[in-house]
Image (cartoon, rainbow, N blue to C red; front, side, top):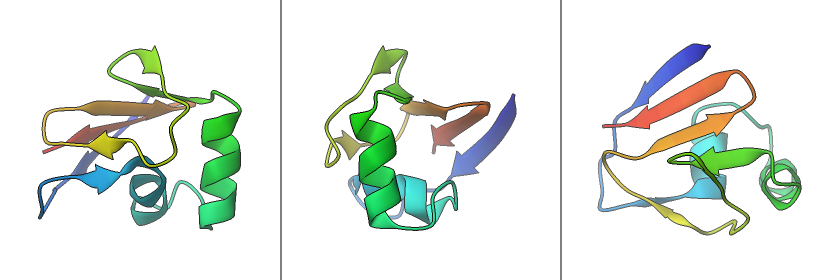
Length: 70
């Protein structure tokens, strides 16, 4: 599994923005579709909220890519 360490420079980032900022999706529309299909987990749980607030210490997984928010 590929690991990406994402350095957060604010209190939180929305899930759909995180996927775009890490280049896992090419657009916000693609991010919304992937999240809506249940392909993304946050801390081991399927997350369907596109604007879910992701904070430092959380782990997001999409396919074979794991994002650690630091």
